[in-house]
Length: 137
Image (tube, rainbow, N blue to C red; front, side, top):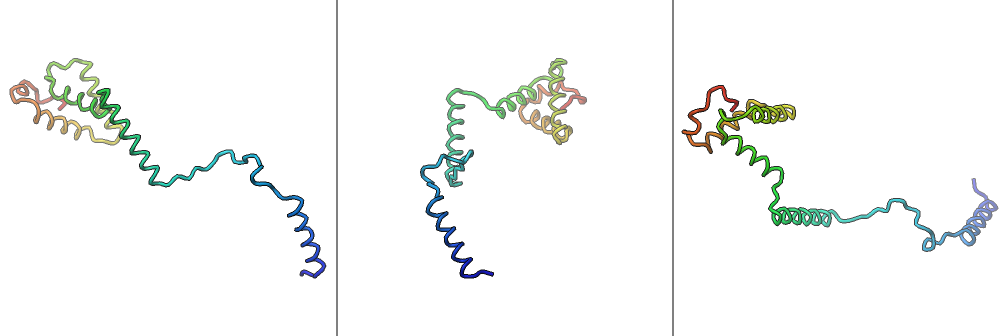
């Protein structure tokens, strides 16, 4: 319950606080350790597109393949190699690739079927004639 006397004392204290203990917001040191930078989402997306375009043009200028191109070159080399000519190391690399796909949740039998389809599409029938039925793909 407030009385006129209480209201007068509170008003005097508040007046003292405002006149004697005010803070100069312009002259204070920066208190924030991490400044918040608010950038519009459209600007962030545009900057991302610019970085991606720059990366792609740099890769093109240097004629540098990315991981997809390297992977596709390896698949092409694999499907065009005569299976009878594959060395133990070649078969080891193939086994490791299939184990990696299996570990990441892919069906290795389906991966072999995909390789077989690619081989049938890109390798001449005569070159495939020497393949055995127990070939990995």
